[in-house]
Length: 294
DNA sequence: AACTCGTATCATATGGCTCA
DNA sequence: TGAGCCATATGATACGAGTT
View (cartoon, rainbow, N blue to C red):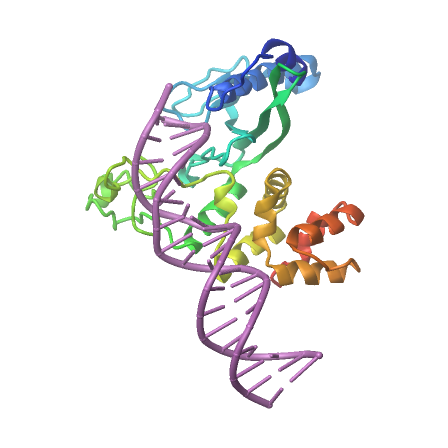
């Protein structure tokens, strides 16, 4: 993919918010299909397709010859929600807002981490540095639990703020932030923030991992310890957003972690982590267990 | 010294907003 | 409609004074 984009999308300038993300996602589908076609066995029978509008998720993996009915998911193996994050922006904030109820067991989340990268003095190209591809549900559960831990809530059956009768309430499961404002357009109208349709902060791919306070941080640590998918996602985000990792643990924690590894605990968080990562390349796996609530 | 507490300062987390 | 930016309350940290 990078080979192709280096050639095709090489340009001068390279603006943010350019829609490059969608292009990269489309390209991913194209290359996946090539790969599938080149495989033997059952993989050959499958292909990735775009989902029509108004469907949760972006792509579906279907059986080529089967009848496909997007409305009922008939003929589909699983869906993929694709997100891209431009590492060059101040606050990359792709939103993964799919609800549990919109997600089935084998659905996947794809995150492409890219940035405009210098090709030579004058030209840049959109390089994909890394990616996450894994089951959606563990990420969704982690996101939701952390949402609750920071004081947010979800609309519950029979308790819709709009006062819908529970039989036809479409708002159940919709996230509300701590001040009770809806976080998606489809949330209850009475919870619309003034001046804006919805708050739009739920499910930020980096932001959802942030914690403040003890409770949230122990939820974070528990999820990281208990679920390998969550751990992989966290590790990837922390690799590319190093400050997030620093913020997740206090100075004294970094010190005791260093101490446990027999590494100098001098300096600030950043220096301590540098020292750790130099001699313990897999320190994120150690972080996972060292700070696991028992 | 080591330990606790209060305070000032600074950074982060998070709600809200704009823009195309 | 999503990506990106801005504002600000809250929380973390360093530091100094008081205490053991």
